[in-house]
Image 1 (cartoon, helix red, strand yellow):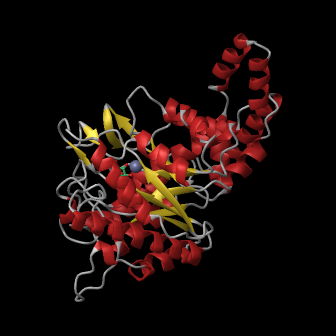
Image 2: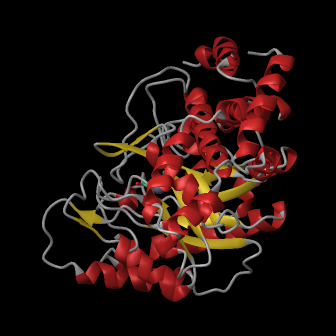
Image 3: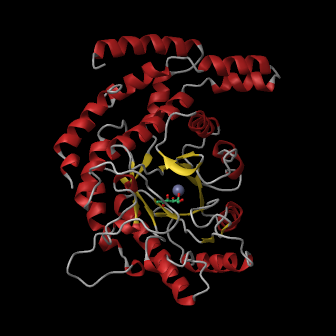
Length: 424
Ligand code: RNT
Ligand code: ZN
């Protein structure tokens, strides 16, 4: 589908259909163009990082699959991200984890509590060169000091202190990224702490976590550079019975301390939905971060697809006029398919969901609802599902100079043949 004339013709017909509903497709496209998605670096190497050759360990996270070609070096990872971004319409952001630090060989080991912005200089330069903003994450797993299953809530003061120092270091790094790139860096904190089996003390670890967070966030840092964020979880592998940083814990902490809350779509009971939580938490928080993921039966971190829930999340962001206050990040890691393709599929789906939401005649639906006409509301919502948003999407892709339809896969296959498949 690279026939430009055909794409434009189909678009004109779609534009007409939408205008009959009072929807301006050009406006929708313009809004979409301004919406950035934060692309997670960790999809490119199965949450490995560049500190040791061991990669992901502990923390209850698992990337399954053995698809060849994962990035082994920062340069390879940057190349892969560039490839993925060239196939995603719009200008987006890079979401980096602390374990992707570049510590020059030969020097004595720099531990997580000693990291500085200097260790991310190459990433920052690269982001600058590509016109990307950056977001950041502390890495509180895959480390010998996380092996006990406890980090910021550890009863071992030495361990707790080490992770507090890591948290403090990460805020400084995030602030430097934000300053350097002139766009606030959302610096997210997730810890794996918890018990596999039924605890005798649920209170103690939470009190210690609160104390650690207070120590980490003690220094006030300009919000134009840094936006602090905390992420809860329901359970992990090895923390099935008790997670210290639960939803209630962090919701309370974020509200009280006026920082961001991260809602990861895989971190709730399977019948709970993040789409219903957004308008609740946004009443009490200035900003939130989303970790858009796809849990299948559990927090499996499958690649994001255009599911009903993804569409519902996008609808909430648009209907509630939250796009300026909600930071959209992706969080999945699939090692069983081409990793570059995984980024492209997830990101394009997120953008498609946003576009579909932007093409909704929200005012009309609201009027139906307010007048008690629930028949029309349901009828309209269902009719909208077969409106020609695909034509608008194709037109948008072609306008943004990225492949239309499945054409992007050819480019991934070509990159695979030339680059990723040659990696051992
Ligand atoms: C873990 C959290 C966390 C991680 C990344 C790698 O359950 O979702 O966000 O996925 O930090
Ligand atoms: Zn997450």
